[in-house]
Each structure stands twice: as structure tokens, then as C-alpha cells.
Length: 200
View 1 (tube, one colour):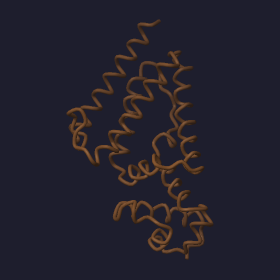
View 2 (cartoon, helix red, strand yellow; view 1 turned 45 degrees about the vertical axis):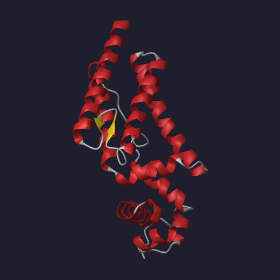
View 3 (spheres, helix red, strand yellow; view 1 turned 90 degrees about the vertical axis):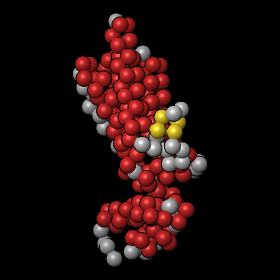
View 4 (cartoon, one colour; view 1 turned 120 degrees about the vertical axis):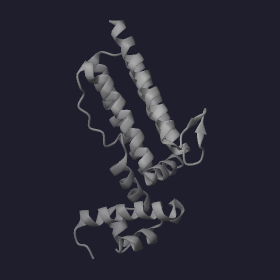
């Protein structure tokens, strides 16, 4: 048995990923995770407290917004920074099947573990929007609205793409559809930043 606590926790988190990828979320359980990790199920309770907290640990480790630690660029580079940020969110969600499945699980749950997870994500998002508002003197309501609509739309479309090939004619199961979305986001950001410059 692995004695190092952190190494064991990583093995358990990896077991969650492997099980969901290979067998689906429906097969996920304490016994299955412990068997896949090759450890006693008591270690799940000892290190995480419950299966839900183990799942939350996976989400925390992979969640785009929770793990975002940005350093804001100059005003001239802000457009490219924002475009790349949302592009990175798209790529992460499209590439991580397990995270998409766990986001759906999170949407259908409302226990203390999930509420804490949402609070962490909310805090990081608010920190970023506040930084942009204060650094560039942009209208708070506009920054909040633009960030909310873009981030939530990306998440929704990435989740929907597993079940629906199109959304408003955009091929969300194909690279060309996401390239179209990426170009649309870039155009919206450019136009919004031009509006901010004209405001001064």
C-alpha cells in the first residue's frame, strides 16, 4: 500500500478519471474507485471524507476558472489575452470528457461540498472581473455581463455537444463549429473593446 498521502490522493483522483472515461459516471462508486486505485476504500473516507468530496477534488484540480491565476496584460494586449482565455476554456472542456460528466453531476447536486466548489469558482471569477474593472476603468455591469455570457455559453455548448450535433446551425461536435464560435467570441471582444475606447 502506498504510504505517501498525497501520492495516494492523486491515485484516487486518477481512478475517478479512468472509471468515468471507460465505464461512465453511473459505474462510479466507493468500491469501484478503491479497486481501481488498488487501495482500501477506507482511505477515500480518510483523505476525502466521502465519494462526493473525492469527485469535488477532481473538479477542483481540473476546473478552468478555479485554476486560473492571471496576470493582466497591457491595455493594448487585453483583447488577445481575453480571446486566448476563452479559447483555453473551450479547449479544456472539449478535451476533458470526465470534467464534462462531472459538471453535469454538479448541476444536479446541491450539497455542502458542491456549494463550496461553486463558491470557489465564483470567487475566482469575481476576482478576475474586479481586476479588469479596476485596472482598465471599464463599466462593472458590462464586464460582468460579457464574462458571464461568454463563460456560461462555452460551458453549455461543450456539455450539449455530447448529445446534439448542432446548435443554431453551428456544428458543435466538429472542430469547424468551434472555430466558428472562437471567431465569433473574438469579434465580440474586439467590438466591445472598441466601444470602451470610444467611451473615453
